[in-house]
Length: 395
Ligand SMILES: Cc1ncc(COP(=O)(O)O)c(C=O)c1O
Figure 1: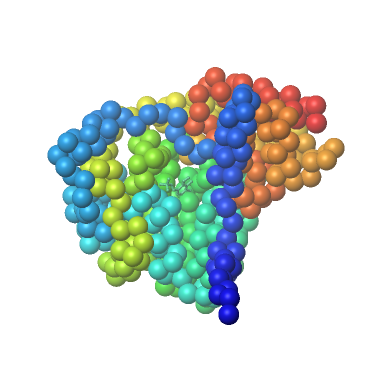
Figure 2: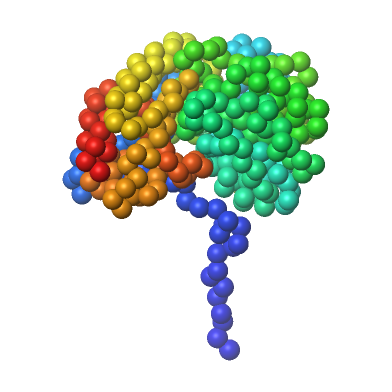
C-alpha cells in the first residue's frame, strides 16, 4: 500500500493571516529590485541607526565570548536593567522574578496571549488596532471584541467606550498608547478609570508600551505605576523603537511572577533565550546615555507637523493629529471612485501608479484610511506626499 503523506496545514494557522505590514514591505522591495523608485512609508521602523554605545556593547560581548546560551527567559543582568529603567522612567517597582526577556515586543505579546487565553475567552481591543493583536488572539482560539473609537476625537479611547463590552468572558483588555496606527494617546485619567474597571472585575489590563517614549504633548506614563496595579497589569515592552534596535529583537514582559512562569515555560520550548549578544547591547541601551531618544523624538515631531499639514492640504483628505508614535492615519475616502472602493485597492493603485507604499487601513480595522510611517527622512516625506497629492487629485 502506498504511504499517504498528510500535507494539510493546521487549522490554527488557517485562522491567522500574513502581517499586512510585512506584505506591503515585500511588494515595495520587489518593485525596488526591478528598478522602480519606490517611496516606502510601509515599514514601522526608525530610520536612525542604533546608537554607537549600544553597538560597541555588542562588539564587546562577542570579543568576550558572551556567545553561549543564557537563561531561557533572559539574563538576570538584563532583567535588572529593565526593572531599573522602568522604575526610573515610570515609578514602578518590578523585580527580576516579574520580568521576562523576549525576542522583540511581538514575542511577549504572542507569549502572553498563548499562555493566558483559553478558547472562548474574550479580549477587548480598541479600533484601529495593531494588526498582530487580532491574529495572536485568534491563534489562541479566543475571541476579539472590537471597540470603535471616533476619528473626529483623534481616535482617543475612553473608559465609557470600553465598559459596555466587558462580559464574564473578558480575560484581557488590550491598550496600546501611543497607538499604532493612529498615534492616539490615552488620557491618563481615562487609563486609570479603565484600570479600575478591569481590576475590579479581575480582568487583565495589557499595556503595549512599544512607543511609550514617543509622546508629543504629554509625559511618559505607565499604568503599572498605580498602587496595586502589578497584580492585574501586563506590560509588553520593546527596545525596538525606543533605541532604534528593530533588528536586534529584544522585548520584555513585566507581569505577576506566576504569569512570567507560564511565559517562560512556553518560551523554553520555542525560541529559548533571545540572542546573548543582543541582550548585552540591551543592557547598555537601558543603562547608558538616553539622549538619542530625545533626539529622535524631536525629529519625529518635526516630521509629524510637516506630514499632518501636508496631508490636510490635499483636497478632501482628513488627518487626525497623532499625539505619539510615528504614524499618520489619514482618511483617504475621498479617493474612493474610479475603481477604488477600499483601502487595499487604494494602497495597491498608489503603489502601482505613484510608487508609494502605505499600509491599507483594513489591516487595522478601518477601511477608509491608510497608515503612513513618518520614521523616514524629510526628503522622502516630501517626495512621497507630493506623489500622494497628485495621485488623489487625479483619481
Ligand atoms: C504596537 C506595537 N507593539 C509591538 C511591536 C513589536 O515590536 P518588536 O517586535 O519589533 O519589538 C510593534 C512593532 O511594530 C508595534 O507597532
